[in-house]
Length: 197
Image 1: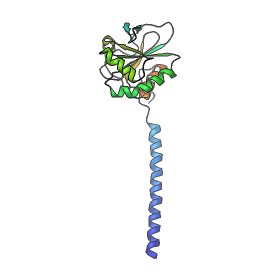
Image 2: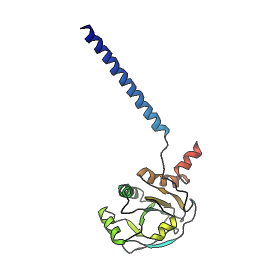
Image 3: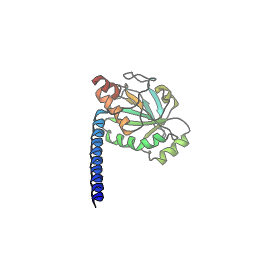
Image 4: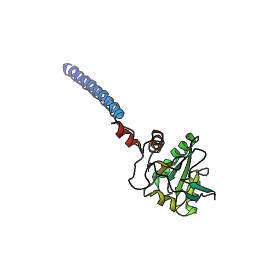
């Protein structure tokens, strides 16, 4: 009976120690979470510079409507150009966040989805992902102008036609970091946090 009592006491001491270790680890995770700054869209060194006036490009969307991207806008609205592809798995995952952001930021933002390739393939992509009410343009010149070489890539242009933020966007947080960068008047959130360090 004594050996059983001793083994139960030792077992309870081990369980209590494990609970204390688990609580300490949980606390450390909270501390680490507070220390890590949010990651913004990944800036790429090539392409137009932040603060540069964009070249004005006349494009036509999949519905045949004409559009001017990069032109100053009298209505004071900004334009987010998001480069996507039907063969990009990350683009497909990001689309619901883009639609949600477009709806939430509709007071000041227009979203343009851009790509190049065969119109039939893109019409099928639009149909599959419920993008019928989105502005969707096919323009190789647009991608070349922004020097897009990876997807999904986004560029945020203000009402004056000036590039305010750009970068690779793999998540809603990356996408929203572009809006925050424009609001703060910086090229990226990384630049903002580096200036505060």
